[in-house]
Image 1 (cartoon, helix red, strand yellow):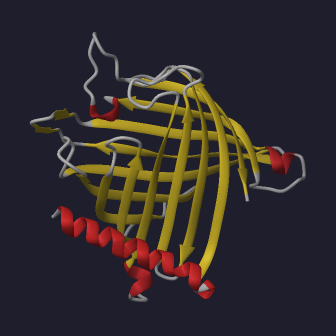
Image 2 (cartoon, rainbow, N blue to C red; image 1 turned 135 degrees about the vertical axis):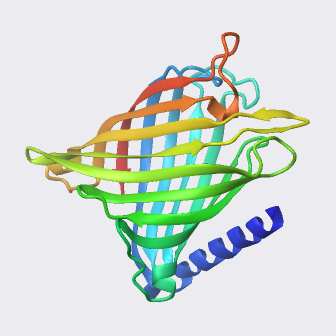
Image 3 (tube, rainbow, N blue to C red; image 1 turned 90 degrees about the vertical axis):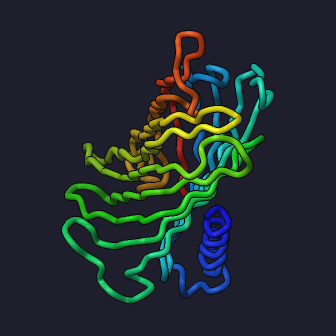
Length: 261
């Protein structure tokens, strides 16, 4: 199963990447840089500064999202990563509605997709995720995705062949001459997995951002410059069970500045 998952992931990424050589396939794209400063993180050093690059696009046969975090531990060293680290995800989705040129709409569902994600970072962090995805039409939301993934970890570490549910959303609220954007995701890993290296526990990671469109308020361009906060709640962070001796339930808030280009 892992080899099949990896092959499908690579095929999806290659197919998605083909858009770069065929501009007529690209329907839209957006890039951004975000700076965050936050406190009260668990497992890793409590104060963190993060610079994030994000890319999103839609093309003839689906959509793509990727991000890379560069995380600085504010002068303190992490036990495994030192003074800084990196983490990223590449998430192509193939739309069955677009591929077959059919409307796959029923109830709130407006499209059915094959969703994939490749997770990567420092040390032993590689994972491959694959499963069904759905675009939902929910009143008021700019978009709402619901993806179901089967997770496959690289190597023998625990956390293999378990399920994850990931909703992704965006909601805009007009405020005076500008607006507030509330967007984010939730990763809910619903299973435990145990092997000779230990146990990976079910966990829930909730990560919304609340951002004011400062660019629109200053008349320098809507949806370009945001300021706000990011909230990061993670129960059993990294699949490590929370305990009195080692706290892994995280509730951290970061200030943010985000620039789209």
